[in-house]
Amino acid sequence: MKNYMMRNESNSPEAMFQNVYDKIFSPIFYDENRSWMKTDVKETDDQYIMEIELPGFKKENIAIDYEDGYVTINASRESNESNDKFICKERCVKCSRSYYVGYIDSSMIKASYEDGILKLEVPKENPNSGKKGIQIN
Image (cartoon, rainbow, N blue to C red; front, side, top):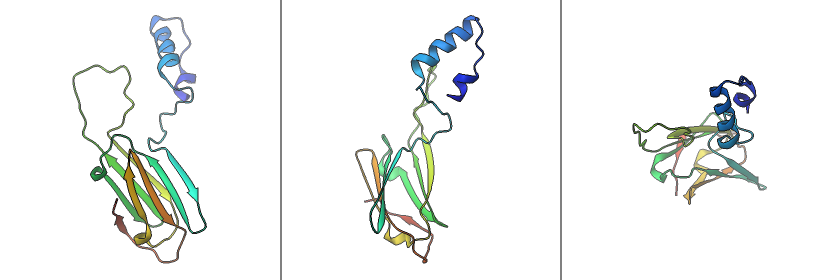
């Protein structure tokens, strides 16, 4: 949205094409800095359940780490670079996002991945902390 609002509203052919392109191909509330990992978080009495969209990524290309109160997810896939000229390219090849979950025992985090959704079951804050990777089931 930021880019759309800042565009020059002139009558030049380039500006007119860009305005038409923006109206057709850009989401209404586009934010170039948005996270590609859309996440739903549910709370229970003793844990948080996070469901994170990672469509098109293989389970073995997803890494989950815990350090200093943050769970960090890194995902990557092969890039099929070509000489094609893209008008719009929004699918990411690598993405990363961190979530603050507090100081917990990282061995208690459960992870599963099915149908492009990474599900994390994260216990609520605990004074014992650690640094460790999490295994995806």
